Image (tube, rainbow, N blue to C red; front, side, top):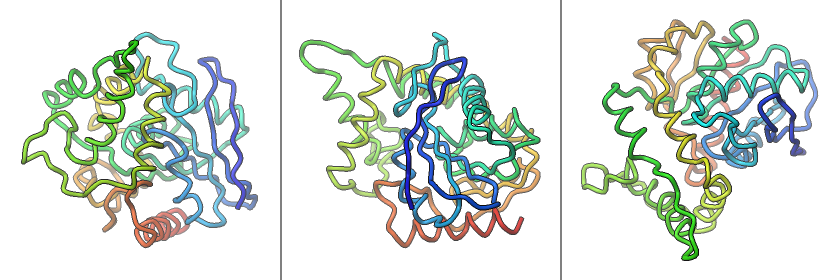
Length: 271
């Protein structure tokens, strides 16, 4: 399998993409990651002969930052759809991880005739008070100074995200107890955050402000949910819940990634 990087012009700026060089008659699977398309390489490889297009959201990975001073998931979804238009993509299936899962919901709502299936991995449902608290406290503006404070903050943010949920609430009841990934994986993810240090807080704010529950009710295509997203099944019209936990490029085992790929492939081909 060959993966190729590409930058796609849209009216809102350039979107960075990672494309698998595979032909065939299947609809492409569009993948929206949490931080960077590089996270999706293992899952793309496990999907085998399925054509995949992974896209960085505006202000994440190597895509341009949002032009709007108050970005939204709605605006990000519009840019992704414009990028797919530029690629000549018609109908497609859709996978989204965490922040990308929320964008996937919005893309499915904005382009219902084109999105035939959606896989949600970490969309999450929270009440309004919790969403407002996370929008306020989860990602403060990153301070860039002569002391390199941004380097320390980004490293601690990434590392602590594996130790606690949310990362800034360091109490026993918030411990994730999943352990830390390899230091190289922490480094790679920290670099992705550093790339977007000037706009990261606004992008994350938009993520938590997004009304997931309200928009899920407008999704009409069949949906596949991770086990920990099972509570979304009561809202979606056509939902199937897997036994899989979240896919994480830094922590998921080869067996877990292969299991996710089999479930996704079966869902896309048989529902």
